[in-house]
Image (cartoon, rainbow, N blue to C red; front, top):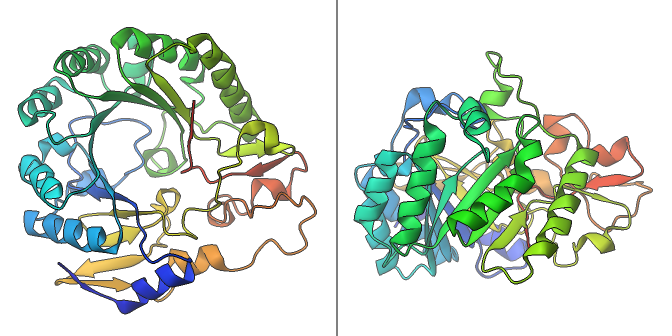
Length: 356
């Protein structure tokens, strides 16, 4: 287990918690055999850094002791990491309540996942960014659609709890409802829609893909269409999930009642990278603001961390009275929160999800 900066425990108490970081994301490696135009890892993919197995185990121990219940092994592509099975086995030994693997679903990945087996893996999340070959492959890579769909079929047949994640942008948004139909046909247990953030490859100076993030009002329309379409699946075994990201005034109708606000404020998650950086908000992966560093057996909290940034008062004088303080990360990424220039909508933490 890593030695720990005691300020981290103090932050949990400040957040009103004895235990925290319920959701742990371990980026085993930045190596990937896909080159998706919207990948949020950006330049990290060029460096192809990997975490030592001993470091992975120490992270599993440390964050479990601090309160982590669910761990997701991710990348890059985690099935390219040579010690994935040892990581899963060790997480199981530590009695993580859920052990997840997030994958691109390539043919190679499918074979590794099948070898891994489903006895310890709670579920597998497969990225698929189009309901058709043309749209998916234009974002991910040529041949990806058929590989990924075949992998999903094999995993479902083998008894894996298999789920699909679609990252929605201006190029594939029109296929959202078709993706629900495809997911149902493939027999997955859940299809989840993420809003694309303009970070990583999309934020790079070299980006010529034309992919853009969905405008707030358009995203609200898409989420409302998902909710309406889901009514036709009332008797389904498959669940449907999406990230609200934005809400209209009168949000009571948008089912935001369980929403607690910014996940950075209550330390709901932790993402750790091979380069030593530890983040509580993935929206800030590009911006040099993070929570802690691990190096030489020690996790040290940053002097100016995400936690202080998210907790500083910044909504004084707001007339919307939305009862939430929106997304502070927008202050850095776009220069102002969407509610500053609109009296109709306000930002919701894009890491929070609704499940239908």
